[in-house]
Image (cartoon, rainbow, N blue to C red; front, side):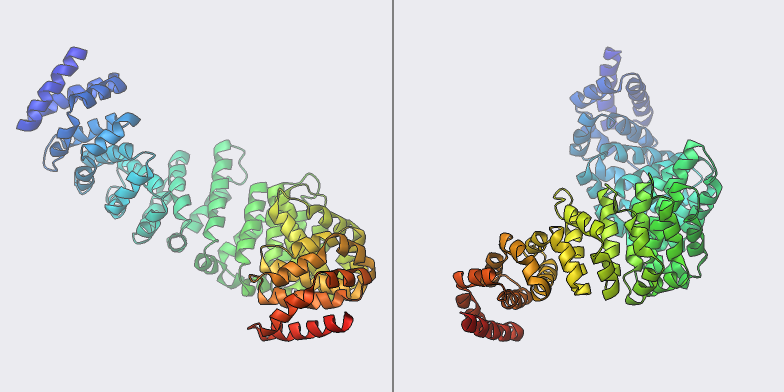
Length: 558
């Protein structure tokens, strides 16, 4: 066998130069046979013989041996150690040229060869994209859609290339959406459909392609799959239901595709998705809630949905998942409610529908994603004074918020808890709420929030602290002292990087703290006058005016 192979390689070297087709074909057949018996050993011998260097010249479009040469390359490139030698032998460029061939066998073996050489290499795949293989392959899929092997080769190539961000623009400029949807509609086998799904998912991350897929009719195909598979217990059917409904949600992440499917809330797709929420299938409940969260990305849609009873549907869904519920469904339903609560006109309607009560049932959840959405939903709802006061006096809620303010492993939960604490004070302007927060140990967290890297959070904390100082300074005094608020304010005013609104609100707060003897003494000890007098010349007029007022106050009080 080894002797035969060595003979074949020697002979192949001669015939590669002479290009005697019969003799060449015989040598290639022997090589393919050897590769089928022991691919790795044969590949090592091919590499050692230096024959790869000659293959580039043998990949001639008009030669009858081209398909076999490409087949040999495809076989040797199954081995990782052979891929770089194939690149070094200059095989990529002639192989790419062969994708314009009319011969289906040449196309198939060329596609395999390129796929194997570039397997798992983003840099080589990017090179193929730059050489323009995407439009060529899309065209091939359209022309040869009856050839199952070629179709599969194209799909595998698309699946690999679509993972690269640089491919999306090229795909978007072809009719890939139309071709894939056409192909999808013809498939009856689960495996074949799954293969197309694997290409659709990465492509659908691109907004332009999302819209193209919607216009090509993919959504109707997905809805049909959902309808067919919803009552099945078969593993394949359950998997396909999940893939179809997940892809549906992904298509709704694009603004244009989402709006096209919403159709003013009258669209067939929107109505079908609505029917998923009361279903008994967890996957459909999840997809339905996520779809609503995606439709709820502009005020017009949110207002329409709230006016048409979506809130009640989502609350019913949450109710079914309170005890030992499905965490992903809880998270999705809370996401939808949070988005729906953004337009001002929806807040009162959602409060009177009992959303806060429905949401508070999840206070005991130990799952950070659920905690995060719960906090976000409540924060969106409490613009109204009455709602903020009612929630701010809820000791269980405030104690849980204070606990979550220390969730250092979950920055999102920690940030949202701080923001909700601050919002309860800012919107309620209530002494009772402040007392509840002081008693639950929330003051230190608001003081820490004033040092956040996010200006919006710093500002919310300073405004809340100023209200505390104005309404309940006596109650909060000790906590403000032990949290070192005065030192923090001095630092914020002295720091040139502090935003104008931070400087302004810090000075307002300093003035409010003068009513406390111990805090007043701290202010005097830290020589605030020096820092404040420098701010009188600040370019921001509000800051300069507040600096003058604060300086007067400090001078009088000293």
